[in-house]
Image 1 (cartoon, rainbow, N blue to C red):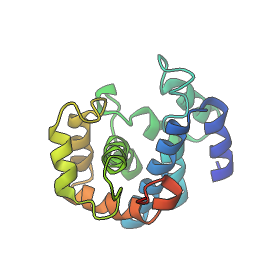
Image 2: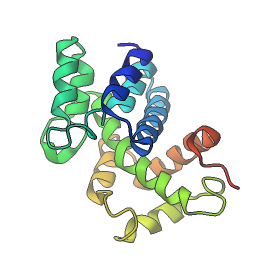
Image 3: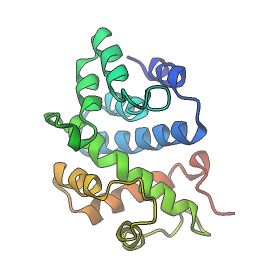
Image 4: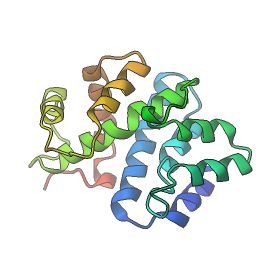
Length: 182
């Protein structure tokens, strides 16, 4: 699957600007994680881009619709990573891509939300401020804090280190992501 095919796949089922933006932010972080772990950047990016492709149209079946379509296309590694991108679903995480999608998904959403409410957006953001937000249960209440912690553990990092990795990755794309101050 190419990136263009993945984008078409995503936009067939996802119309919401916020979900499309989330898909892009996770794609960006997954590409950076692939570079860090010397993995396939294109494959990791596609995984990040389409991990929630069916969420808007088929919320009760998520991620089964995406997984089935990927299996039909012979994209078994992508299907497996997406099938297990939430640890409570009980799918074993075997590859680095399987682990990185868990590490990237919830935490990237939380960092993005935290940046949106800051006057300087992503500029000057620190891990300390994100960790403080994570302790506030009412902030980004839909973010599963256990999942955030498990994601860092799966890749063998401290949570603070993962946050410190993601912030500059998002900073490098701040204009595209709407995270520039002013």
